[in-house]
Image (cartoon, rainbow, N blue to C red; front, side, top):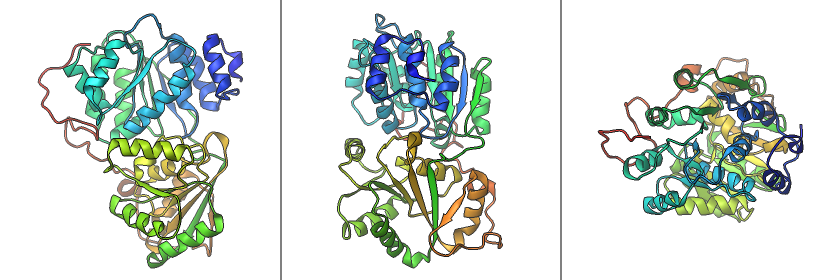
Amino acid sequence: MRFDEIHLKPEIQKALAEMGFTELTPVQEQTLPFIMEERDLIALAQTGSGKTAACAIPLIQRVDSANPAVQALIIVPTRELALQYVAEIAAIAKYTNVRPFAVYGGFSMDIQTSKLTDGVQILVATPGRLIDLLYNTPLRLSEVVTFVLDEADEMLNLGFLADVEFIFSCLIHQHQTMLFSATIPKEIKNLAKSYLKDPITVELNIEQVAPESLEHYFMQIKPVHRFEKLMDYLNIESPEQAILFCNSRTGAEKLYHKLKEKIDSVEIIHGGLEQSRRTSLFRRFRDMKIRYMVATDIAGRGLDFSHVTHVINYDFPRELDAYTHRTGRTARMGRRGKALTLIAPSELGKLRLLIHKKHIEPQWLGPAPDLQKPHAHHDEKSYSHRRGGRSRPGGRGRDSRHHRRDKGPSS
């Protein structure tokens, strides 16, 4: 189906044409009719599937630009995702009078409050900052007609479940709710059951977890030769642009300093950097001003880097889903991409589970190990179901402020 076959405002059609959006992606084709019918929706889709536009287009279509109140609320887990989301909405709304805005921690709340007072119809927010604004500013959600919870499983991983439930509790009036997630763990199922009304479920990632245009390469190495093998690969492959993932900030910094001695145009990004620095690095990387980015998993979720040709797992991911999110930074929207994962012998058991669970067809650089042989046991419970920060009731995520809340905001 083509976008020009859908009944959209001419201003939206004009912006979509300028952005090169002609054919709907599968997630857009299957969700847009239900979203535009104002049905509650649960959508499971692979990363890079076009779900941001699937949400943004009907939101812009529906908003009353003459009303300055917040009419669409989108919750995302990280600041980077908030900025990316609002940028895409702004591009699609370019020729309309719809005003989108993003609020997140680490930025002046006074400036954000002033912007909201001037009028914002589509608000993208991280949970912690939104709750701060609800408690400390005149912001109200009483005119929200569409609520979107994006990357729901990542909200759970980051300890945002209590905050998300609180935000749901503020939306007591009639409204449409959409929930997007790569996976639906039990806690998210319970959330949907409690707050969504007769939702339509669209599942596009059951059989095809990874994009078909993504090639999965693996290389068994001795840990002592890890950096040497990486350099051999970079010299031979010469990626146009690559992200190199490490499991820890310390590991990422060590790799970054080693790479700086060998190659040009390399930077590092992790959660310990100032927000302004992280935003600048993401922008420069997206604009192809940085060729190699060493990263922790802060860059492994939802962010759209259209020029990335290679993803390299310098460290084998600690969680199964992290592999999908990391490798999803390439081969987006049908483009070709390669993922290389370096494997130590002790990690072959985890690899076997990954290949089985994610339906991966592995290609080996160098000798392929016999994955049928017994290796160290890594069952699904111990490996792929790690949940950070959710055991403490009311636990807060990464952009939170720590203050006591005795009364809830009205909406």
